[in-house]
Image (cartoon, rainbow, N blue to C red; front, side):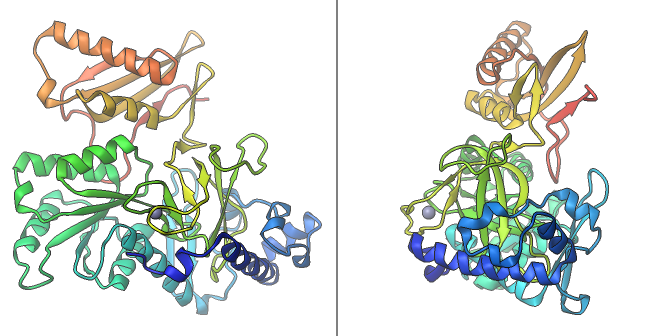
Length: 441
Ligand SMILES: [Zn+2]
């Protein structure tokens, strides 16, 4: 099902025409309403009239997380507080939190965007959707919530944590269908590592047959195709990707359809670019670079050429589902998550993909990077799958060798692999910690 055919199935010409007219409006809007942007544009010798369409986008200066920090908390807001109906903030792992705001219309567009992604996952009004994203300042919970309500599905706002309750509600609401919609809890929105955690609990309790789960919409951290395959085969469901970031809006900027050929961007609202991480100049379809977004319709916090630090590529062209919107490939990581070990670029997602492909280990791992005698070292702790765990030292030695070989092939550097017993690495109910870098670079 396509939620908004008139926008999601436009011809490329129509879309570019719409983006151009919206970009001209948005640039005028920020110039006249955000002093910080006006000064930035003036410093670059730019006036709003210089931007006549999307072909002029590269004339505009970038916005980075630093710009949001410099103007903390609300210096980039384009409307007075009386027009702001909601605030969210992203956790400040380094320094201050990033505060974002929404007008009533921003919230409506957000719900629309999430609705489109839900429709891509075939979620509609007959579904009961358990939202297991965190509610609160984090955009995940409420962002998903409004979209679920907007498509007319039943929302179970569980937020994160309390696995026992998650499973109980999932199960019980499935069988008490008479009191709500008949399908039970049919979709769950949460971060992928949390879903893996729930998967383990479901298997431990042996309650899979009692659930009516049919799909999952996961996001908020990069995950791999292999992890999707695991989730789908272990839970017998369809797993979909939802992408977003609070600075731009929250979840719903893009999502993938049933064909899983990349994430359809809601590009009538968010103009994407892919730039080379080195030269910061635009690069072509299919090439991996940093994703940059310009909001086209935002009122409270419009951002021009915001550098997401997410690394991916874009493809244009019609999808089998009928949508014509540009698609993001799977994320390969973040430019600031990227580790450089002995001069080689290493992403945690590469380790995950390699481990999952092997099958004998669980996708739980921890990379420990250190520097000994001026030489970078990489140790990878890997949980062995319960089925393959053995007391035989020889068998474990062979497995260690095999993993070392697989990782060396994938990363092009030789890691030291250490096997750990099933379920000993810390499970997270939020974002997974995959890397400890002790080098203090
Ligand atoms: Zn599609």
